Every structure is written in C-alpha cells, then in structure tokens.
Length: 428
Image (cartoon, rainbow, N blue to C red):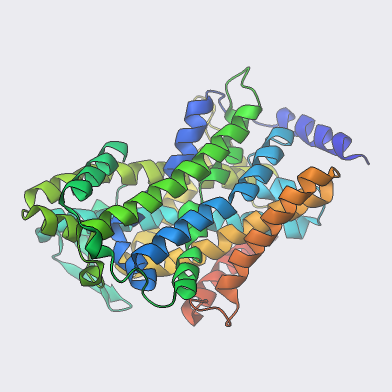
C-alpha cells in the first residue's frame, strides 16, 4: 500500500472517533512547547549542573545539545504536518514497524512527559520550603536518605520570562568574570559530555506539539507546527545557556556545589540580602505551573491516544461530552503524579537520568521511521543526522563505557515502567 494511502486511511479513521476541542494557534503551540521544556530545573538543580561540568562545560553542553536537536526537531515538524495524531511517536513508528514496537516506543515517550509531573510537584515543595522553612516539619518517612515532609507533600502543586530577565540583570550588575574559574569541572570533553547526557530531559518539550496537533484551530496552517517546534528548540537551549551563565557569573560556582538551592544562594550572596531572593523564588512558582501544565497536557493526550487506539484499556480514550477533553486520561495522570509525590526529594536527580533516556529513545524511533518513509535525498540527510544524534544521546545513558551511565536503581525504574506497560497492554 502506498504511504499516502496509509496516512489517509489512518487520518480518516481517527476523525471517525471521538475528537477533542480545536482551539490552539501558533502562539499556543510555542507556549506549550517552551513551557513543557523550561520549568525550574535551572533553579533547583543548578548545583548538579555546575558540579558535573563546571560553568563553561554546562554552557557548551546545553548549547551543543540545542544545535544537535535541530535535525530532530525538523523531523518532528515534518511528521506532524503529514500525520497530526495525538499518539505522536507511536503513530509515526506504526507506519513502518510492528504494533508492539509502536506501542513501547510511545510508552517510553509517555514516561518522559509523565515523569516531569511529580518532579515539578516535588520541586515546588523545595522552593516553598526555601521561602518558608517551617514547611520542613512533620517528617513522615525517608526515601534514599531524603526526608519527606507532610507540609511539602500536601503543597505538591505545580510557574518565567520576567523572573529570568530580572536574574540576568542582577548577574550583569553584581557579577564578575573571575567567578567562572575554573571553567570546567574536569576535562573539557568529559564536562561537556556529562551535561549533554541530561540535555534530552531538560529539552524534552518541543515534541509535545504533535500530541495536541488534533486540537489546532480550524484553518490553522500545518507549517505552524514546524515553526513552533523549531522556535522552542532554539529559545529553550538559549534559556538554559543564559541561566547557567548568570549564576556562574554572579558568584564563585565551586562554593555552590552541594547547596540545596544553589541559584538562590548565588543571588543572595551577590545582593547581600535574603528578601529579594524570596521574592524571586515566589515568582519562580509560576514557572513550575507552566512546566507542569505543559507536561501534564502532553502525557494525558498521549495516554488518551493509546486508549483510543485500544493499545490499553479503551476507557482511557474517552472524551468528556461537555468540555471535549480526555477526562479519564487526565484523572489517570493526576493519580500517577500524586503517587510520585510520595518519593519526595529522592526523585529529582534520578528522574533526570531516566527521562533523558526515554526522550532520546522516542526521538530515535521517530527519526528512523521518517528516514524509512521519506525518499528524498535532502530530507534523508537531515533525518540521518537526527538518527545519529538521538542514538548517541540514548547510548550515553545505557552503555557503561560512558561516564554518567544508568545506575542499578535507574534500570529498576525503567523495568517497572515497562512492566506496567505490559500489564496495561495485555488487559486491553
């Protein structure tokens, strides 16, 4: 069967099923992609970034990651124009691979989105506890040595342009270039590599556009999907580069390693007062809402698409009669997020590693599928670059030869997620 005929039949079949509300425009797609990508990792995990790479290593790692992801973004921009399906990677892979490959590709990508939701919910607890230390009371239990406090657990909510500009201004006014020294934590190559490994997690978001492609405003031009994706990749990478530069410039970075909230500490040292930092952190809560919302939308739509395709119990594919939203999928993601909150602070850094692998795997599958479908040489060349980049990012997490590869705990987390996918797929 010709590829165009296959795509047409799939599209016709999809429209015959339950449909979602169609209200999104170009600015909405860009806001979703950027918001899904940029949350508060730059506030909560800055000490980890500087500790693994040093300031210049982290800056070059994010900059290089943004450039390398351009061909991957290009492939997604092409795919969504041809096949605007909420199943995203699962729908793309289904064009050329068996159903089981399609299912588990999408299932791993769902992990990349969903895992951010409890991450952001835990992160907002860290932010709030920094502002109001009394929240660090009523310890319930510990996970991996990290206490889980009742007030922060209950606070698990989901929160950045104005805040970011403010921090850059303070850094430029109070900082000094000498704070960058030494520029790398270890050798330049290893320093850049260690940041490049986590780029997939923190840059995940541009591919959220296909997950809501079915909700485009009537008359929306398909090229708008492509533009939103590419803008999100470039702006997102630039955001992270400037965030690291601002923090490293404003205070000696080696003194920030191991600090619970390195970004705030750096600006507190530069300003010589605590109240401005508290104000900044309160505003950062809005960045959390932004990132939480984006990943929550993307994961709920992907789960909805799976239910609609009957890859998992079909009830997940139900649409609310009044609001035209995937109500059952939304409730399921909410329940999973609340369960993830129970892990507390121990969730933050390991989630970064697992999410990076899941994202890179999904990107690789989407690029490989497009390379098989597309016959034009020029587009195959760009797609080939996307395949190479995403495969490298994936291998850097799973091969022991690379520094910063998966730990046993992270392999266990992946196995648990795959096991859950098997159970749902069998029970469909």
